[in-house]
Image (cartoon, rainbow, N blue to C red; front, side, top):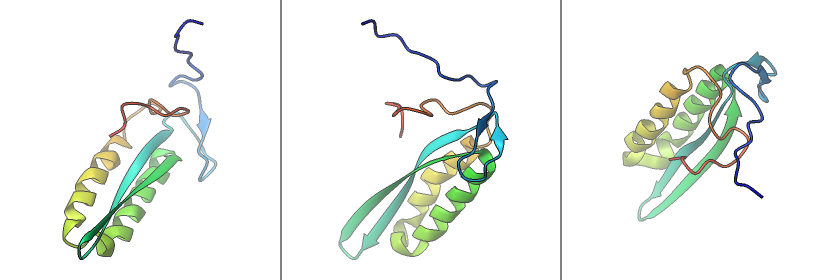
Length: 106
């Protein structure tokens, strides 16, 4: 079988946000990052979120607020990483890797 990429959707397709139920031309999928620091122990968290831009920004704010205390002095790192997602949530079009695991996630 050939290794051909099959497009299941394009940016003109309206897809339904699984969180609020609204149709959107810009459904996003991001792996939001969290960090916990407890004296000498680090723990890293990933939150895979699929949502429209409004719901995605709300999810990013929630994750950042949740990790203020957990990340302690490393909170700016959590804020920096997730702020890149916050800015990208406003871009037009669906995310690459919306329905599969993309190798380009950071």
